[in-house]
Amino acid sequence: MVQPGRHNILFPLSLFSDGLLRKTSVELAAQVVRRGQVIRTCVGTHLERQAAIALVHSARDRGVVFDTYTAWVAYSLGLIGVVKYLFRRVVLPQSSLDELLDWRQRFEGSGDEPLMTIGYAEGEYFREEIPAERLAEAVGTINTGIEALRTELEILPAAAPTAPSVLELTLLDIARHGFLDPVYISMTENLLLLSEDLHYRNLAHQMHGRDGAWLQAALLVAADTRKMELEAYAHAVCDLAIQRHDHVSLNGATLVAIAIEEQSDPIERFKAAAAFIGTPSADVASHLSVGWDFLRAIWATDQPYLRRAKAAGVILERLTSLLARHNQLRPVYSAMIENSRRHPLLRDYLISWARGHFISV
Image (cartoon, rainbow, N blue to C red):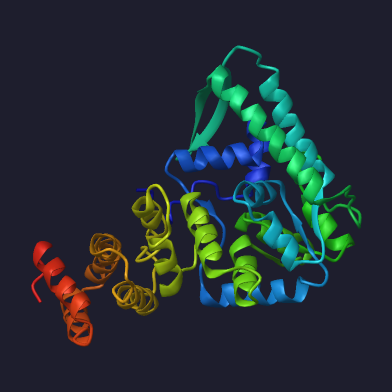
């Protein structure tokens, strides 16, 4: 399992992808994840999340502007409708559409031959060959995505609202012409920048004082305002976790909703989300609280015993690893057993799981 926290790209995806690799940020993100890395979406603190939620609330009557990668993620996860329901305007720069059109053209131009591309991971460049059959499939996917974005979003041209600084000129010299277009549209149209790329949002703030948010912050507002059902919200959060967007915020109710989803491989989806519990930088108290809420709630459902046990086992593995790192395993696990006396199924499972994993309590 890929563990959250391994960050490969330390600057905006779009700057690196187009400026140095001559590919789209969508392609680079896919390569990053395939090589065992994550997409740095946010720092993951409570204060950061609350600030982003406040920005989303304040922007609902104005609207948002996507960057290329975030627009593609929203489209591929079926979230465009939710975002449009939440905000008055949802904008995509014309240059982002052009970027996707260039992507399609590059793949189409390969014909029946495989395409050799350059990627980057672990501080090194590598070659990756895309077979001709995969290229043909990708062209169809790209076509469908382009048409959906062109139809569903407001497409706008962009121009720098002020004379570009020396830094801006340098960045634009490295990257494609439209690298800063989401920032410029955010300024000229008074829209919130919605980007899954933490480094891009940081750049927008440093250069032009434009604060931004990311998709989960918008989804949290959608769920809290009943624009999105819990099951749909949990499904979307799990999809973001599968795409390794770090950090994904979870609570007990969301984890339960993911655990009981009717999917072809539910436990693997659940593991992808649970990977964000007990991370190396985790706050022990908050993660333990989320895990404990989940354990009590999942054993109160009427799901089959084996399904509850598998999901509970995944969370216990995450929690016990976290507690062991902080030398708190035995006292905290004993307290969990003590606090589950009114929940006999949970208590019995905690005891049997501890025995099976050689935990003395």
